[in-house]
Length: 418
Image (tube, rainbow, N blue to C red; front, top):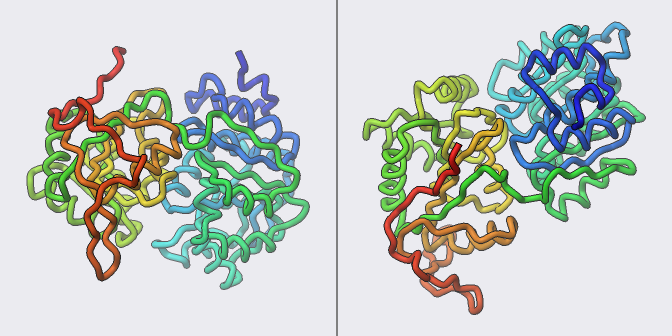
């Protein structure tokens, strides 16, 4: 069996890993750590919850430990970019565990909090800077940080980082880094068009893969429950919540306003619920996550801002109240359960407007998700802005037979015996 010792990591790192409770490296760590230690550019693909942060963080820290030069003001020696504030915090949390007993320093910069504090934190320089792109550019524009000393670049959740929402920021940031540079991209999914963009930033990369892209963790039990509309979805959600009062439930909504409305409705009905989405301040998001992590609120209603960066082993259920418009995001959403070797359930409530989205998800994952209950609705085109959707049946050749699942009572996915 491969061990952390056999991967060639520094003894101080091995001690930190042991103190963090890691017993053996995961498949993505076994495959990624050696080439990173060799200085290779790496594209790493693995399911969520399989240890990608350690896969790039441990060999990155190992290389930085060899340099004891005094930090230059306003500089960073390594840059890690992530798409959400929550993911930045999660990465930094793990890195702080790994650097115990070393001279290294980790600094985070994200939006939604005081930029002046971040300016002060960068004044004396840092070893590893973990950042969201927007706030990093703000600090660059202020002259608060220089990246010319950074010879390591990590893009976590690379598919999200390289889509059109972040590519312009990356084009501004990447040229400012030092050369030669080692670049690492890690994600659970990597669509083909994203691979082409990623090739722009990597030099002769090695691709390491612990599971097929788009595949969910084996211990996630998935299911679909047909729904007649929003009100029916609310009724279904409350039924499932009542059926499983133990554990933590993460509920995904498509829009910020939808997430907030659903959370307030659940609270009014007596459920302990909180929400996070883009309209919340960083303080509100932090408090909501704290309440959810500690179990004082067992339901977290969120948009896709929470699909990446929430690493809470206690999440036993993920409910897709609305299906995501991007199939890959479904993989990230359900990956918030069945973490740290535990089991979890992922249940989607699917209305007529979402049947096309469900087909795309199943195509991406190369599976057919079992139907748990409800009567299959008539497929309806998603409503356009300012207009109404039209009713219509499934495209020819793509209809799903109703079979014995149609109209059956709701049942929870069967869980394997412990």
